[in-house]
Figure 1 (cartoon, rainbow, N blue to C red):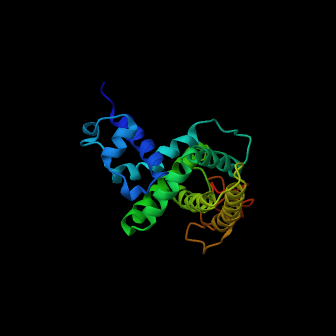
Figure 2 (cartoon, helix red, strand yellow):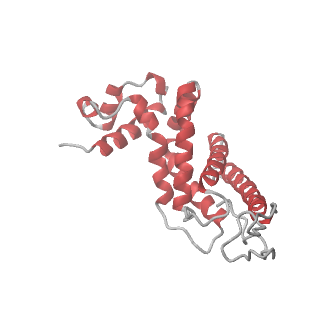
Figure 3 (cartoon, helix red, strand yellow):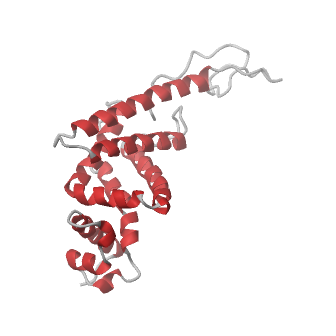
Length: 230
């Protein structure tokens, strides 16, 4: 029976995480992983290594954030909270293996550098999953993604110490981080829409005026409503 590349990587990753819950990730061999995954070692040739399986971890759990629809009546902060918690719920069955993988990763500067990019990708998908990936937001998307990545990293540190099956520590830290982002986004919005600059020869008085603002020196009504991190 032939297996797709995606199938091999997914099965290999899950098998590796289960094995890492019993022994160190650094001691795993690809042969061990193949056996645990019910695959042939040859299936991994040109497809995956132990290192590339480690690199696939973030993306695998990112998919959980889009596993359920979001309530568009909720605030952006609430939506982000919901989708990010779906990710932690998907991670929970592999807690011990993931913790060992994270410890192994943190001992390597190269792997930590790779993690920076992976964090940004995860945050981007969190915004997509929460329906917050539009370009009509006060805060540019790249800045939003970096801020959400920091919030996710803070929550992950709490998750690693979690002892409550209800994720009390993780939820508290994530909520705190997202509220801080919400406040920061509000300040950013006011800075963008509420700061003056010197009028130019055409009489433009506001940096970042919305198209409907007058160019005759009159002031806009104020900053856009909402103080979401998106």
